[in-house]
View (tube, rainbow, N blue to C red):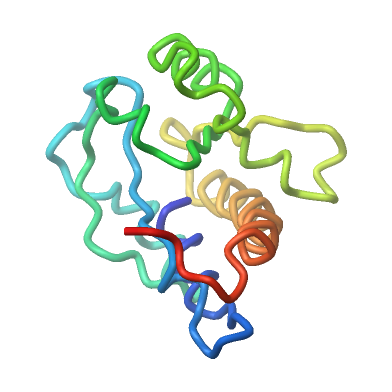
Length: 154
């Protein structure tokens, strides 16, 4: 859900040069384990995104690749457990580039984890999505300030 929300919000974030933030980003999502690898997005996540007016895209679950972590400009974790797993996978290569999504939510009240709704119901997915949307608003704003009018190198 976070990938779809970030792409959606970045599509709606104009930059000074007339481009949108999404034009300057390469956003992808991966899990810390092999669960559901190769499967499409959970239908409950898809439904929650659609209810919130966010195009779900065509996500296929995959596992994060240790070798790729060093090439990424920013790695966003949704909870502290994943943050620690990613930190151990990336070693020093992620120093200063690994963040928690809710750290970008000014109204998060210090809560840093987005709870996994997998074993929950429709309300759990909606609650999770609301937290993701709030975090992504802050992240999108921060990225727009960093990216600005100059394109990132390819």
